[in-house]
Image (cartoon, rainbow, N blue to C red):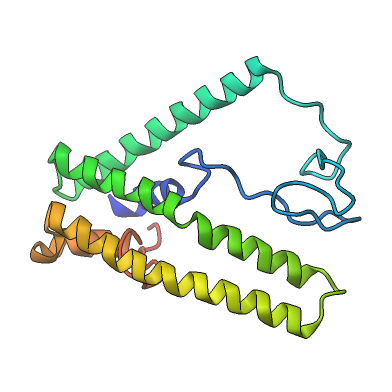
Length: 192
């Protein structure tokens, strides 16, 4: 059933679901924070994302547990996607593996767009930035987005060479509908 599982696929496509570094908050109430987490004066920003007091650094055991938890979550989401694909008639494990590998590689490859977007957002949030500085940051972002479009076209061609989705309308429709390929907005049905 697409409606229930479609949300799982959307979560799988997010960077957090794939255990990529989460997008860091770019600003606090008091200061703009650089994408690397440093404050303008060079002090390390270690505030609670909810706005509370600074948190203590994680211990190695806590970091290990976090990595394990994220790995379990990735595995669970991958299995949910496999079940969804199977429910739509795509039971071939090799096909499912290729789609999952493609999703993971695409999320990672889009990191440059995400980082450039964070930089643009930082400039935009800073009221001291001139229009020329905002325009320059916007231009850089648009350049990265355009380069990523070309990269995505090539990646989709490579995926097609591997699984032949262009000769399989049902498979192509599923990949487009779930936002795996193409540039169209997600068009998932509403839950009934």
